[in-house]
Image (tube, rainbow, N blue to C red):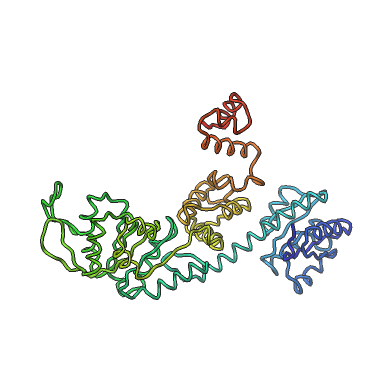
Length: 441
């Protein structure tokens, strides 16, 4: 693996060790600088930037802990590893308190050093990324909790800002969990209606027979159970904004009544003849393909064009890989205020390689759960759900864990137990034993 952008300083007054470490670093493809005089480290730091420093503990006239302090004082972002043949737990703890990231016990062979260095580089790059993300989050203007640096998302955010203070209806499209409601709030808050009500209606969560009453209200006695007059959501939103989520689930009856409100700004409560006027800005959202619904005649074309004056399309998280690290750090900060929660390189890889079918909402729930399990410490791979851990099968899971995941998937797709055994290439008894072993009952 090549890390040609990584620069490493090695400090050791034993030239044979120094040269061996230097050869290993060169084999990894990093830029390496060798220093056999610890008293000259400061001069190197003044003329070069080092990502990582390997520092021997026992040296003269400065020992490794003194060199460590010098590096941290002059270049605090340099990751320092202490090398020692005289290592004790006390020395390691002291080195960590002074800012060392890890320590390496001598003697070590070429392959051990290579693997250890790769892990240190991985750790350093992750820390560097976290610092960059923290800086980016600090300068991002809060946009109704919309955290993004993705070009498409920023373009949609700009469109939302430009149309916010108009009276045009807005249709927001995107999979569940992509932030449609956040965009609706953003548009409302950017408009001259910001101090007026923002009323949300989930059209898919309310039974059809109740939705008309929910939207337009009813009078006492209008139907069984109507024990008193009820004000509908459109009246409650008067002067402000109504957000109709999952608009694609509306029945033909409700579609026709909604069309009238959009055309004439008029409606009647169920059970009365009085026509009421209402001033409401309509923002709707759907995770369905309304173009397909139009072709199937399940959604009115005239209503679609009324709702679709401005169309905002939000990409799924799998198409925004540049946002995943930013969102991870944002949610870590959100759910662990006052704590320094870290992410292990293995967990970081798994989170970045997962396809996120539940989008940002799934990522948020995953980070909240992981922080609880980690106890405000370091989020490790085992703190993540199995489906996310399985993205790291080649390098992060044991053979038993790989086998368990594979058997579980085959059991899910097979028509019966015998077919599962055949697909796995084992007999029925062996599969029974393995199912019992892994608790796949």
